[in-house]
Image (cartoon, rainbow, N blue to C red; front, top):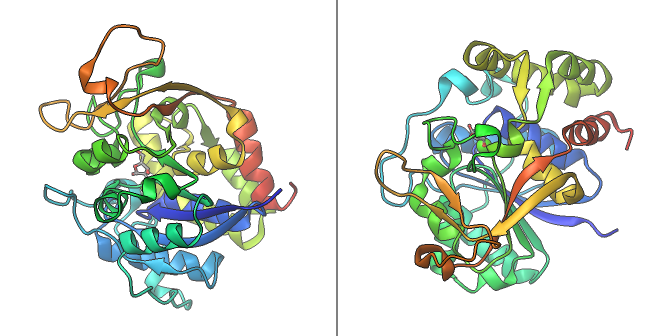
Length: 323
Ligand code: BDR
Ligand code: CA
């Protein structure tokens, strides 16, 4: 089969890094570029990390620097307690000998526009941070919505198994990072799939699973183990979990193996003010009642179920080279 041509929009981030390794090592993905955005760290930190990761795992892949703050609000504080002071679980990437990839001269949103326009109908956007770069790209060139193959977003939470938020009772981190951008991106006329907490918190890499990858997947496996120590510690303290939720790699898995996910179709809105800011609400396509705030918008696919063992097996086989 032909490869998926991917632009990876990311705020690395421990799980962002693990998802980049996944994409770099899977033979069905051609990584056209990595675009950074604020989120798990400042834009300086996430861009430095994106350049470090690209140089280490996907040499030659362009990296473009994106938004430093949301469209209409102040940048959130970096999530050091989750992702470490360096955004990569305190592995201190700047002390490693490897230098980062060169930075593309274009801002991330223009890199996205020009790459999509150069290959109409072929580019998949995988977005796993706040959606600011995608909203800026749409604002500058709305036609790209019709030229993208698909947009796969890690973000949001729709209440399956009671999952509604991870940074507030009502909001997931990427959507809360820029709710205004998220409402624009989820309302645009491009094919969007949302991979939210409904499935990512039902997919768990246990300590034993990560140790097995460490021991069998060479440098990549060792890296995945090292980068996830601080993150696993956070999960142990905050959720009494002997392992980690699989957020950003689930968006990659959806691109590679959509049959592992059950989706529900319908337009989605994002609340942009009030105590539930960042909440994502879908009107299922099967609901007959009129809902004017949803009805004029295109349907998104929301993932509500996952075959978690199969997803974990896909990641493991990709890293171990046993696909
Ligand atoms: C999302 O938030 C970030 O902290 C992670 O990298 C992931 O993209 C999970 O809510
Ligand atoms: Ca992320």
